Length: 160
Length: 160
Image (cartoon, rainbow over all chains, first blue to last red; front, side, top):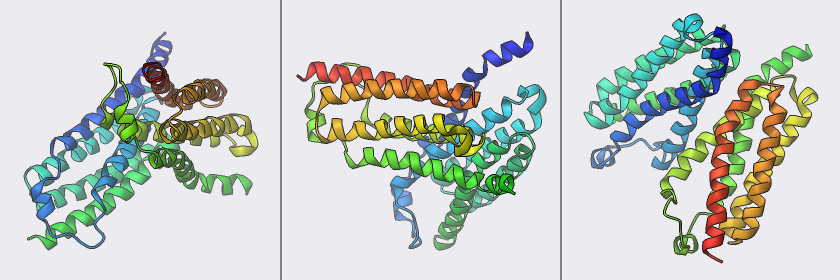
């Protein structure tokens, strides 16, 4: 009975994880790069602005699918720890944009993105023994955040 | 040995499926809605243009993950039929944009999107017994294409 009711909620849960991840994404949407960002000195390898929207949409989607795949292995009851780690990294992810684009605190944002990187790496190791595919779905996210951290650090250094 | 070498190619395969799906997406990017689309009579419930980019990015990502999850169940050797169906629907998906936005053939595009809908539904049933999660990952895609088909049909009717 319990198994059946959990099983019937599975597709709905996918929608739930997607909504949750895009809620974090929406936080980013509240703080768009404006005049301040335009005026910053940029490195030569600074990517064009249009690339961030599609990349983050794809990354948030894979993130949601990864969490859902882990959740399917017994739900919150059995996967409490890895799922809480996932939520932790999602909160850190949502916090970065207000720090950088909202408060213009590039140094604080850099420290925060290092924490985010560690939280993602930690979540990946926690997912490893639960669902291998979920781990790989987070790999592009870790790669992109590594790049974003280097970019954040460079912008901080170039604009003291 | 064979199992190990397949296993080591798994993360690379995720990248492959993502590239393949976004190649189909790029076909859409070649034919942007321009003056012609702007001049069409629209229904009152026509969605704002900015919604299509993020929605399709999320759908192509879920599509790629779904195909990858099925591929992981024994690769092309064992999943030839469902994967070929998947490729078939992807080709139909890529063809719609040149028909609609390239050639402005709204009626032909409508017939084609009905075929696409059937191909997706067929792929979903083929995925069902291979990997349940992969099936659910294609559900939002089928919902969106249903909506797109109704929109295409309405635009065809409103602009004879």
